[in-house]
Amino acid sequence: MKRTMKKILALTVCASMILGMTACGDKSSSDGDKTKITFCLDWTPNTNHTGLYVALANGYFEDEGLDVEIVQPAENTAAQMCAAGEAQFAIEAQDTLAASLASDDPLGITAVATILQHNTSGIMSRKGDGITRPAGLTGKTYSTWESPIELAMLENVVNADGGDFSKVKQIPNDITDEPAALKAKQTDAIWVFEGWSKINADVNNVPVDYFSFADMNPTFDYYTPVIIANNDFLKESPDVAKAFMRAAKKGYEFAAENPDEAAEILIKEDNTGSLKKSEKLVKKSQEFLSKKYIDDAKSWGYIDPERWNNFYKWLYDNKLCSKDLTDKGFSNDYLED
Image: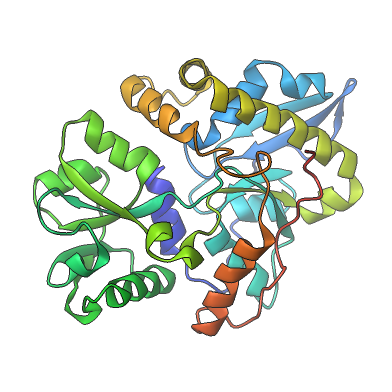
């Protein structure tokens, strides 16, 4: 998940996207009486993905007549693979999805569900350093991916809180273990996802402070991560898409209601083995995210058009995007209440 943050912020909104196509499974086809579906993750398995693995392990996809394979992409290629039809579904985020929508040659993908109802990212710092709010970053060192969106959001919240963003010292972010980097004083502050990196700090007994972007500015309560789908697939096979979403929804509802059991399923089903030595982190993260999958929404996956549009309007108004993306790039049509 921390690598997902690096992926998200490394991309520039509205920059042209290079299609580095690497095979990500077979295109949708009939396998006996089941329809083959390839789902491409954004990185290695983590608790953002738990509902998918639950749906796979508990037979929810099979019950819908689907033969689903979950695969990992080469770095920064999940959306491109989905657009190319190498995967019918993948994981993206609203901020980086904007680049594909505003491009002169936009990718043929649409967000069809959100995994979490609210943006759980924010700034983590050493406890006691005074960075409990954005203004506290003034005069401190921040590890940056040098993304225009990242820095514009940070400037917005720092200055609005009475700080001075021009006095925030920026250094390149090459950190892979955020709690360890803070403890070693390699940096003063890092952008993280609360449900993974802050939980990791708690698990490793590293005292930290944290504030979320959504709490600082409601406009920044955008959707991350989201499930995207190939537009041609949606047009040609809407019933299959709805069947997939029914099973995925059931998986995430199970994960929300049974976090410990769902965490065990994720660890067991992770064919990369990357979670085997992180059981405590996975279970604590799952406990946290179980309350975030549905939260205050009417049902899992629902994308609020107003919140979606507010963030894209902010990008356009601040010249971070060359096109007005109001009502672009998402659909609730494949979800069922």
